[in-house]
Length: 237
Image (cartoon, rainbow, N blue to C red; front, side, top):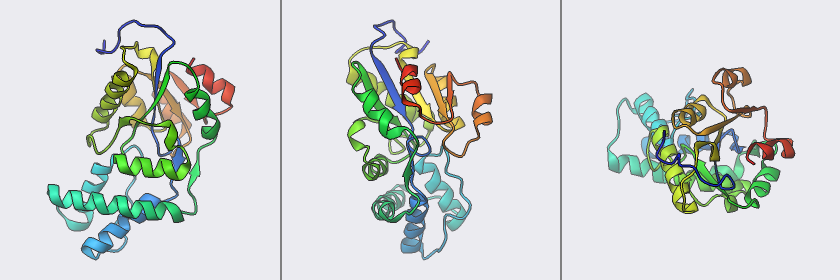
């Protein structure tokens, strides 16, 4: 049983969200930003090619981009330069991405959850922390998220999710049972991480992972989208 699985009052809950495909879609802003980075640093056009980002961490994406375009890995200083440029360009591409959009139900769900007593909302995302908040600011959702686990914390999704849980428990100031800690995501990576950690998993089929693929993982809850509001809020109460 996980270390945080200690019986406590059921009124307290941590609800931890993935970002891309769960709360929003950037409409290709990340791809555009990485393409700009590799053009600026290495004079390589179209670096993104056919990379599949779903459920991935930003460090793993950089590693793949470097392998496929440079034929090598990069050291710490070069990695940090790529990261810094990516975050700068992402701030610009988010403003112009024509297909940027929020997922159905998100604008109603987050305020409804945030106003509930004992609920704390957090993030478990492969995005670098700065990149995550740039996306949330563009979406008008920044106010709902003050903590989380990020790709800048760890390149492994399990570890960054663990860090999100630990930070949430520190914020709430108590231990919780697994059923009081919810992990909401749209990919197999989100659900498998939550299951391995003993969390309550909520799969939502608003990303590119098919509903039936998510169903095959047998998450605790499976939704086509984060609405209707009353039905979704019931999951977390």
